Length: 200
Image 1 (tube, rainbow, N blue to C red):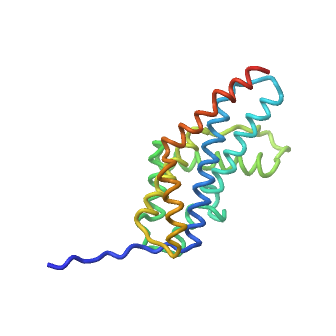
Image 2: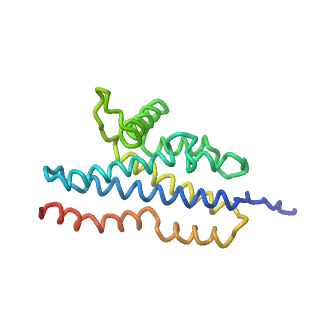
Image 3: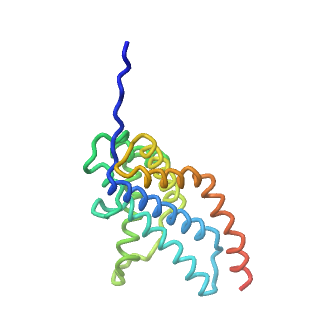
């Protein structure tokens, strides 16, 4: 009995670039969220401002990947031209939602809250509204990003590409900086950040 050789999906160079940029935005979002949470609420303007900057940048990077479909780095772009990937957009959406234990409607409300924060207060300045800026749950945002990193790794492992060397470099990076290693690296920065904030 002859075995049937299964052809791997081929990632284009453009898809590899997108994967790499999603990876970068995921890490930046998580780092911003962890730094935001590490800083205690402070009356010192510079630290309150710093904390708000970490939170704001985290929201911006999250929305680059998960905000509007029109974002150049929205994860849906991975599935726009290649339907032979091992996961579909729907599969990924389900995983992201499940990673934070939400139903579809709960996730939609969460997503809308993050997007509204970005649109109203970080990209635009809707000063003439009664709404006050409020940070969405940065821990949940970070968790979605960590799940997305695992999705990227699965896609890379299951596919070949037009640029094998670039693909190998991305895989080496993600293989080394697993979520555990990456989070440990980020956590290593927190004591110094907290020490500097408490010293003022």
